[in-house]
Length: 90
Image (cartoon, rainbow, N blue to C red):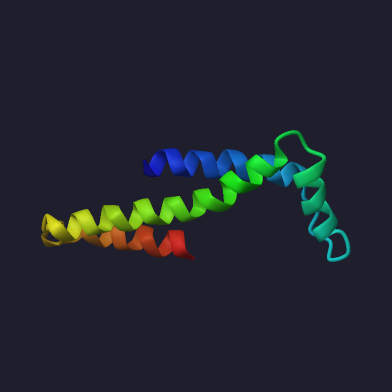
């Protein structure tokens, strides 16, 4: 599930980046352009926004599973996982 969420995030992010402008005067109008004028742009924006929440829910469930089954006793693996968690949140 984490891989699927991450793949959806990357693909929808690329499609959104094709139409977004970061200039302060045109940023809002580019978002409305994505929602109104781009084919299925509102779905892409919706998937990207909610996909991020789903990604973190799956990530926290994965950590919870590791805590439940006692995987924290494998220190090297657990520390790599913590480093990846901090990298994802940064």
